[in-house]
Amino acid sequence: NLLSGQSGRLFLQLRERQSLAYNVGAFSMEGLETGYFAVYMATSPKNLAAALAGIEAELSKVRDKPVNQEELRRVQRYMVGSYETSLQRKSTVASYLAFGELYGLGHDSYTRYAESVMAVTAEEVQRAAKRYLRADRRVVSVVKPEEYSPGAAKKLPNDGQAGILKEGAKSKKRRPKRKNSKRKTKTKTKTKK
Image (cartoon, rainbow, N blue to C red):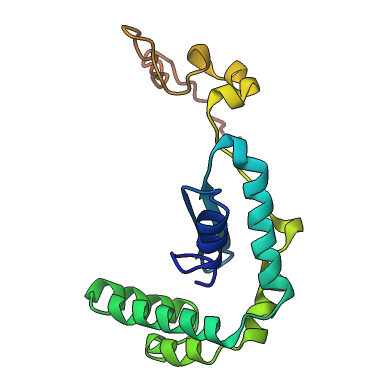
């Protein structure tokens, strides 16, 4: 997509130009109900503030300024090429057939993908970015080493090591409670007079 991959904006700006990321990208997950768009980045804890600001700056550019035609065509050709390659697998074609029906687009909608992608305009990209890349709908999750999150260690079991047992320690597995087999059943019978 426009933001992801080695020629995407996030990679070029945040990794190549600013050296803020070991890895950076974006993806979307569509669904029958709601989906999501996500940006991910692996960075040094000392670069966290600059990295988050850099991500926001790149998202703002997509919202605020239409993408130029050359970049749009490059992204479109890449998306269509990747899609056409994916059609080599029968399981992929089967999923496209099924999802086309589930989404109400028809089982043959996958045959119109390339045409649909190539018809997208820069204005439509910007309109979608304004609709979906909203700061008020954003969820940010940061995972970092304990030494940069001293409060987290206090809340974790096993001396702050989530999921890590001390050498020689036994796992405390919870067993489901057994029903008492000696329990008596009381029955009341009412008789009409």
